[in-house]
Image (cartoon, rainbow, N blue to C red; front, side, top):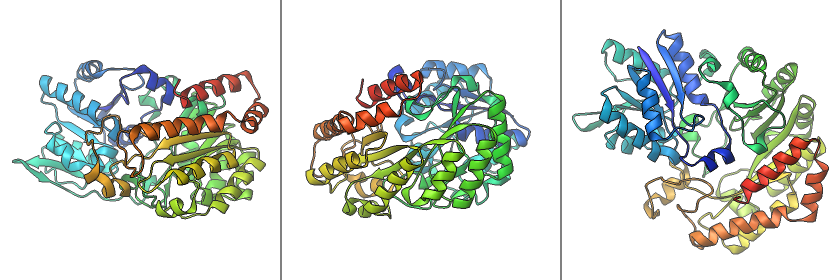
Length: 455
């Protein structure tokens, strides 16, 4: 069987591509490794990095003459994926399989579209590969995680949680052109740079987070041998800097120490995202010693009341200590905040902005809270959403406004004002200038601020 996997465009405007960077399709690469292990032929088409539009994507797929077509989708680009599927249906009867976060969280509506022969929920390595075998041998499609319509009725087969991800081979880097990828301007220090993941899941269940719907609440990591193997491949390909996309990189302290030392063996510069309660000063010191230069923290709010309501499970004081300790080790800090929770009034948002200024991280992101399918927040507000087409469902859009106090325009105005207040301050400007080491730092800082301020 010849399988073609498509990473669809994340957007159709080039400005968005430039702002967000280009990231390899890690999920498809994981699935491709397992498909190859089962002796099927597989290719990946990355329409995002190739800047394909809908027509380009369809032509690229059909040129490969596949037996099976796999598509992945986030909620934010589901409308694009539907258009690609619609065009494919016009020119072929090749089975279309949809997977990814949106397929997992909105399985029923994806089936109702009538565009997909199968919709996979959950992690796709086993379910996709078993489905490919079933199609090849014309066997039963009743496989965990594989959902389809039969005589107009939905056949739902609940997905099976993968307890041990070390049973799978590492992602297949031979199926993509690594030279075409680069993280966003704020997520690398040296070039060539790349994004990857070596673990899945987060033990916490924040109310706004949709990732738990596909990755669960259990932290699972690749083995030390697998990590060495993948990092060795990236080193051979000339990579110097790694942006780890793991949801909570430092979830397991001992694992983090071991991984930090492994990364140092290859001489990479690297950055991560983690939680404030996953690190301590000694762990941060070890990470810094082994090449970690930046950490992103999901702070989200500046009041204890909102932190409690969104189930962050840590305190304002802990956040302050973590940022202070991180800076002390020389690691740069990024802090992510969200505005516009249903209960947030002007005072709560003002305290969040002031808290960001008090913490004074090297970089800050203010977003408008978005009720992504799969999150507890979506379940709470889905019946009240004015729009439910999922178009432009991003953290920089207020189209899916859940606030009880502010209009869409008011939220956007507050977000823009928060950025201006934070960045146009002598204290932050001095900190930014003092952290400059190379001309690349200057260029990257200008590009990042241009993105942040909507330039």
